[in-house]
Image 1: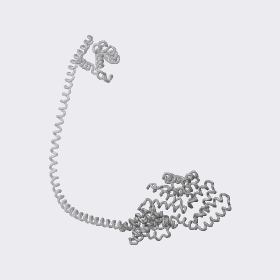
Image 2: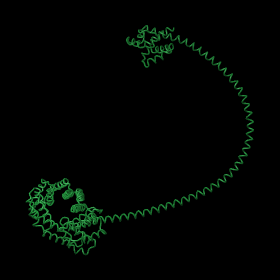
Image 3: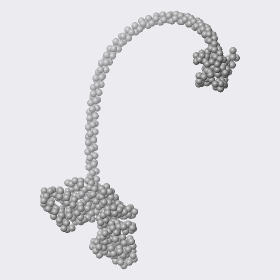
Image 4: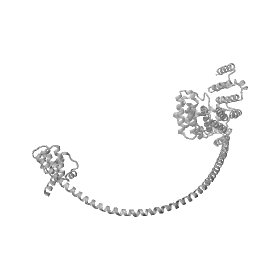
Length: 584
């Protein structure tokens, strides 16, 4: 590995010397891309730019320092101070773009996270979120860091919210979701939501199996082993154990030893669990690892009833507890639970500043509107005054015209009075003539009345003579018709006796003769029958002139049954014939 690193460094230095005209910023972009996969190699390449960067611009120097902080963070190198990052934050807040502000805020939060300054870390991580530019990978890492910080100070509710947001972004960009699910499971466990916690761990385990790259997920499998054991899901923990390739007794890791100890303790194999915890005390020099191991050993021995060993590890546990600054931890947790004081103060200050600017803007708008309304009011006043003056001038002209018209009217009235006097005289003369005409009309009216009476008498005499003439003519005509109608009926009877068919003209003559002899028969026939056929009407008329059933059958050529049925149906016609005979 060292030979490969040296070879890459030599190649990069050769490229730098052969391409001396290449821009320093382009070189740093290349180093940044290398650092995404191999931050140690990228740091070596960045050191080779030390000489060139001295002659570069302030912007290039700031980008250089920011890139170094980025590579150190990816290589898990803990910073010793915040001097550089504070200077970079100040510079990029004034000169940087949105992407550069998001990046510098993120690495400021990472720096303060490593320096155990949780409130300031939260402040800068939230500033990175509030930036308008959105780098999806950095946004995901920001939520992951926020989840870690909240979880570390036991603010599990906010840790769960951040874990959900981290998971949502990973799904949107198609990134690996194993770590987000593990963070979510840990946050739910802190909230005592054990079922949701186990579901999240199941999703992480499924993601590892689907990837088919078990070696890449070794730390996550150890975490799942510990978490499943703590949840009591031993069948799932047993599935994780064969996938873990290294034994912590051989390749030491505090967390691996604690995970295996938790697993064996949950299985009831206390001796195996004690071996892993004692291995931590034998190897680990970090006080936090020893603290967790002694607490674990005290709990197991106390459960087993070995009071001597339990007392021994309890004493060690108390000594390590005194060495740890729990008061500082509690103060830190209280500060974070108070919504990261620094961030709140700055946010409140910005809010007040924004509110002040808003009020100032409102004041300017109000003044402008007031001036605008005052101008409009003045314009309306001037226009109204101008209209008033025009109206006064128009009224004056109208008054002058009215006075002239009045004078003219007076002259016209005098003239009309004179004309009226003349008209009265003429009217009196006309009235006398009218009286004479009326007297003449009365005389003529009297004569006309006498002529009218005489005329009415003549008209009465004439109408009486006309009526007498009409009656005489009607009697003559009736006598002539009676003779003809009887002849027609006699002919029909003769035809009925000889079994001869009647011509349509004969039927027409029969109808006319019967209507003349019996004027009311046709109206009653229509009233009694309503609608009827031509043959039915023929039968009815033959019955009315007094023919018997055989005669009717001879004339109409109908069947005997039909004739008898119709005669029975219209027997009221026979009654009419009898009544007519009685009357004769």
